[in-house]
Length: 258
Ligand SMILES: Nc1ncnc2c1ncn2[C@@H]1O[C@H](COP(=O)(O)OP(=O)(O)O)[C@@H](O)[C@H]1O
Ligand SMILES: [Mg+2]
Image (cartoon, rainbow, N blue to C red):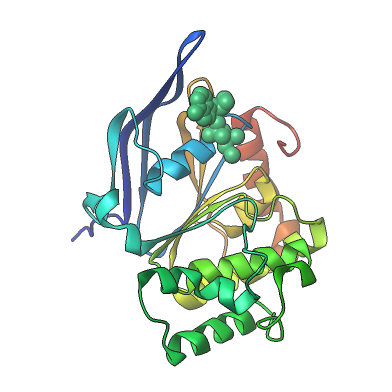
């Protein structure tokens, strides 16, 4: 028996009226994500990746086509979703625990159990001592981990992440990739992850979806058949390199994108 996909994007189109006429950003976009899958979206800058993620999150309404979450319109499933933006967007006047608990406060009373959960999440991302500190006391990478805790605290079944590690240095990014893989494995979430790093996409994903540009649409959907959990060493295997090469060829670049 086939289960309903967690996310189903059907024939989505997104156009804007501009002074120069209609700009079609996405056209005939189709995508399916099954429960517990980790899917990355890669493609050239300006190709419509953020637009697609915002449509899936219900933040933008597509010009045509539809997105369903477990068979329902996205607007009815917002409690199942959490989004991590490229910047952490933490409130500077709230300490880190206060920032993590914010989405729960919006929904009602914060219980002692929720506070314990928030602290557990900080431990999960290696920031056990950061709860009573303020965002400015943390590095950019640490702040992004707090933002990830804020996304996880409401136990979303689906996490949408838009280049969450784009601003990090290479070493921190590497560590965050390992941590995200661990969080994903431990929590069983479905994750839709946008990145412009081909190695990051190959390392993290069950499938890498390549978006072609002008207009943006899915041009390839590549199953990454590498064992889990992946380690740093996997990055140096010939299989890993072959996937990187395949994705790079599809995007039309030799090394990385940016
Ligand atoms: N409100 C808007 N009006 C007109 N064009 C837009 C609007 N929002 C985004 N775009 C255009 O859509 C294209 C895709 O943007 P985006 O989804 O951010 O791409 P990516 O995330 O792949 O870099 C860009 O060319 C951008 O200028
Ligand atoms: Mg973007």
